[in-house]
Image (spheres, rainbow, N blue to C red):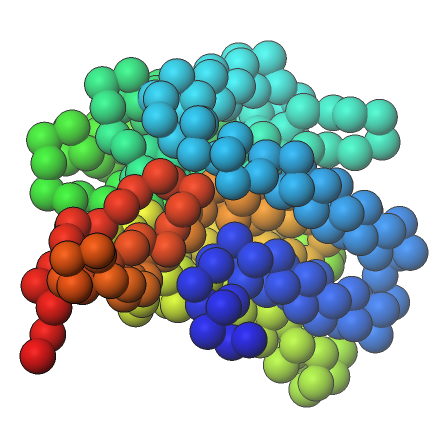
Amino acid sequence: MMNRLIDRPRNLGVICATVAVGLGLAYMGAGGAPASYLLVNVAALVLGATAWLALGRTASVRLAESGSAVLALALLLLATALFGAAADGVSRWVIVGPLSIQVSLIVLPAMIVLYARRADTIGTIGMSIAALALAAQPDRAMAGVLAAGLAAIVVAKRDRLTALALAVVTVAFVVTLIRPDTSPAVPFVDRILYTAFSVHALAGMAVVTGCSVLILPALAGAMRSANQRSVMMAFGATWSGVVAAAALGNYPTPLVGYSGSAVLGYLLSVALLPRVDRLTAGLNVDGTARAIDSSAEDGIIASHIPKLA
């Protein structure tokens, strides 16, 4: 059972999301958070799981074949910077009824996973636009997350396009560091890696544990798959970056705090992960061993290998 989960990071990611949200609900309930906060996170979990099912393996592979998906998501970020709701000098949100949706938390992790799966020219343009949008908002946390995700891809792939994208994103990140970010901490959203311990030691441990499980799909996938390591590294760096930003500044703590945007963003990025390429041996008609890539949804068949004596 555990091996099957490790070979299917998409499935493992849904479990991790459910565990993290559940631990967050326990913390918020113990801390006296408004009931609406709990309901929003539960609704986001259900909606994200629905999107995960709707995307499916086939849709996620098709999206990964084109940089146009990355570009489209980047344009959403730019539109948010230009026309989104502003507060305390920053423009990161879109208002939907009574909810404030942070677009970057939803689309940026998915963009990074897609770009890790296939870095093409259109996708590189999309990443550059996303960097411009984050600098304009400004969003120091997500600009740093984008830089971390791209750095992981560069380390794994070492190609010119990803290096160019990282250079542009690094400049944008420096811009966000220069520009002031005076957004105050919001209860049950920001700084809860620290404040949860004032509620109870168990509440604090629940928050820390919930944040920690978010990178399990990346760790499992990277250990089992060499071909998909760049994607898994990018996913892990992305969500590690989101958690690090929450620890260092007044930024949302993903899934364990009140933030439907982070729940949706995590599940969307999980839905786009490939299945790891663990090899299963079979025999050809001539008696030689055959290696079959178990990531059937990616349509990859491994090369023939000699039969071992």
